[in-house]
Structure formats: C-alpha cells, structure tokens
Length: 177
Image 1 (cartoon, rainbow, N blue to C red):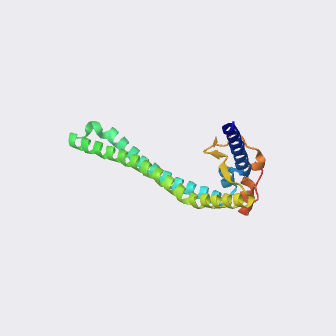
Image 2 (image 1 turned 90 degrees about the vertical axis):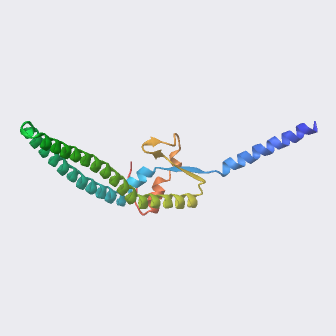
Image 3 (image 1 turned 180 degrees about the horizontal axis):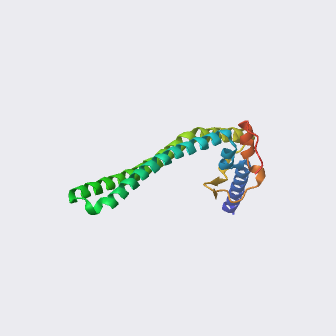
C-alpha cells in the first residue's frame, strides 16, 4: 500500500513538472526567405550576382563562338587535309571542348562562392535580429517556417510568426504578402 501511494505521489509530481515545463516553453517561427526578400540589401546582392553571371555567360559565349568557327573550318577542309594536320586540328578542337567544359564548371563554382560570400552578412544580420526579437519577446525556440521552399513548420498559429517583428527591428517596413 505504501508503495502505491509513493508511486501515485511520484506520478503526480512528474505530471506537474511536465506541465510546468510545457507552460514555460514559448515557440515562434520566422520565414527567413520572406525576411530576406524584404531587405533592400538582397536586391543589391541579386543585382551583383546577375552582373557576375552575365559577365561569365558572355565569356562562355565567346569561347563557344571560337570553337564553332574552328569546327566549321575543320569540317570544310578536313577532306583535303594531310593526316597529321587533321589530327592536330582534332586535338585542338578536343582541347577547346575541354576548356569550355572546365570554364562552365569553374563559372558555376565561382557563382556559388560569390553567392555565399554576398549572402553571409545578410543571413548573419537576420540571425542576430531573430535572436534579439526572440529574447525580447520571451521565446524559448524559433523555427524557420520554410527551408528551400519546403515547409518545416507544418502548422503554426500566425500570432507566433515573428518575421514582421524581425523586419521592424531591422528598420524595414514589412510589405503585405
């Protein structure tokens, strides 16, 4: 009998502790993509990335044009070329193809590096502001509403969305979605 009453007291104590822990937890969420889209700096980053992409694209087009011209010249004269000259031209064309492929890979890596470099200060600023808003409003946890267009928070009451408060903390007037 004494064991049962001790178990009952222990169970009620455990339930009380769990209930108290749940009531102390305050969870909010923020849509980082939305916040980023509202930041004036993100428009400058997008513009810089487009300029870099355009520059790389024009360089690639120049390389491809050179390749096309040399390929056309080879095809027109291949029948009359000596074997040694034809083999030399074929090696040259193969080298140009490899250069184009390498340039494409390097350009893609360059764009990714530039994107990370330009976005890092913005994501840090967003993170700092989320921390500030969460601390001021007493949130114990703040989740991201979406990651890469995929919902992370499957359901949340909109009153716990702190995205607009984060924007206001940054001095940005949120536009309506």
